Length: 257
Image (cartoon, rainbow, N blue to C red; front, side, top):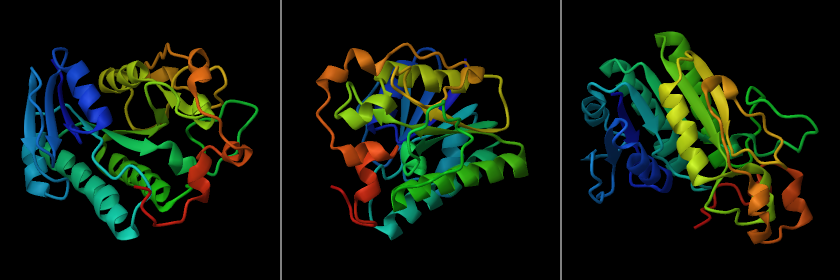
C-alpha cells in the first residue's frame, strides 16, 4: 500500500482527497487547522514553513500531495511566504526524507492570460499568470522543475481548474474540474510510473474545453461540464477573453475575500 502525505488536508480539495483515498492508501494529512477525524487518516497539525515538522511528516512516505497554500489573490508578502517559501520547504523536506514523488497544486491562473485556442493547448505551454497569485503558482512549477532536475525527484504540477460541484459561472464551464475527476486525477498521479517533471491540466473531459488532457499519466476523466452548464451563472464577454476570466482584471495584491 502506497503511503501518501497530503498538505492542506483540511482544505476543500485536501479534505476530499484524504477521505476518498483512505483505505486504498496509507494517508497522512498535514494542516495548520484542527482536523476532524477521518477513519484511516493520520492527522498532523503544523505549518508548511516548518522544515523539521515536514521532514518528520514525510518519513516513510511514497508521495507528497502539496495542496497547502493561499488559493486566490492576496498581499504579495503573504503569497510569497505561503505559496513560494512553503513550497520550497515541502520540496526540501521531501528530498531530505527520501520521498521519490511530489504532486504540486498549481493553478489555471498560472496561465490566466492565455486566450482561447482552436486546438487543444498542451500543459507544456509557457505560463502567462494573471495575478500575483498566478505568478506564485508559475514560480512553484519552476521550483518543482529545479528539484526534479537537481535531485532526480519526480514532480507533477497540476494546473487546477474550476474545482466545483457544478460550474459557478459560464466562464468556468470550459475549465471545470468535478470532484470525482479531481480524485481520479490525483489517484492517477500517485499511481503512474511516469517520472521526471511534468505539468498537467486539472480539468474534466469538458466538450467545450480547449486544454489538452494528459492520458500518458493514466488520467481518464469521465465528467463533462456540458451536462451541468445550464446551472452556471452568466458571465460578461470580457471574462471569456482569457483562461483566467475575471482574475485578469482584479487589482494586483488586493485580497479577494
